[in-house]
Structure formats: C-alpha cells, structure tokens
Image (cartoon, rainbow, N blue to C red; front, side, top):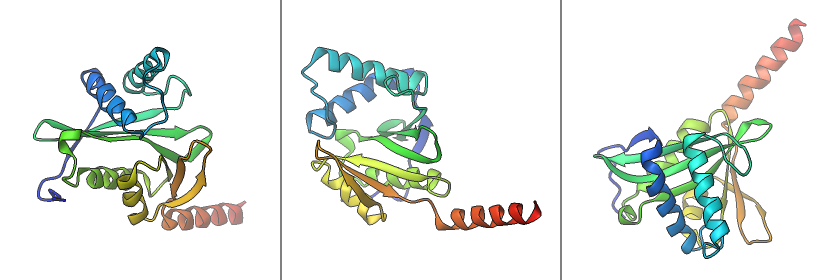
Length: 185
C-alpha cells in the first residue's frame, strides 16, 4: 500500500453535485456485501437513493431523522471518498461513522486510513464514535482495531458494532467541571 502523506486530502461538505457519485459508490459497496440491503429490490433502491439525497441536502437521515454531516475527500479536485457522520439520537456525546466509502479507482493508496484519521480527529475528543461493519469489510475492521476501536456487539445479521470511546482527557475535564459546579452550589 502506498500512502500519500506528502499531500493531505481536501475535505469539503457534500452538495447536490456529489449525490450521483455517492449513490453509485454506495451501491457498489452494497453489491460487495458491505451494507445489508437487497439492491435487486426496486423499493430498496428507491429508499437508498431517497435517504442519500436527504443525507446530503437536508443533512438528516430520511428513515431515522438523525442529523448527518457528509464529508467529501478530494485530492487535486478528484473525489477520493466520502464519510457520513450521524448523530446518535438523544446522546450528544455519541456519533456514528454511518458510511465510509473510498472510490474503487482510488483504493490501495492509504486514503481510507487518512479519511478515518480525519473523522477521529474531528470527533474523538468530544464524542464516542461507533462504526457498524460486516465481516466482508476486513480492511475497515483492521483499520478500526489499529485505532483501538473495540468490538461491542454482534447482531443477527452478522454485523459488528465497534466503539472508540471519547478522549479520557475530556472525561477528566467534565468530571472536574461537575465537581467544581457541585462544590459551588
């Protein structure tokens, strides 16, 4: 694997011009078993397309109404991949890396590692980060394990939920603030 550390990836918020690429990339990953959808079913395809449009345009999941942020990763104006981060409803210190896609033509260059590091860098200090993976996502699972994500639950569909707890420093600061506020009361 050749990692291009000499030049960082650009990160931009997804917009309507990214939707077709995002849908195509997502369906390609689903064909390989990375998502649990029967993409042969017309209604399922319609639902996937509608949900991805909502994720980009309304910044929320159509099916669960969870708020989202979609990051597009580029190098020299070429799309490399995308990550969709979704809030965990009712849990302000928990997020899910809901979707992570690397363009098939860009795989094997270390971009997935760079994208995952960007997600961790943005959210790890303040939030627990969850990721749900299927067994076929061997590379993703390895990347998660190298970054100290722990396996928490395996579901009936054989997917596994991984967790990276937020930075211990954040817990200490919050505990000290709570102690201070309680002592002032």
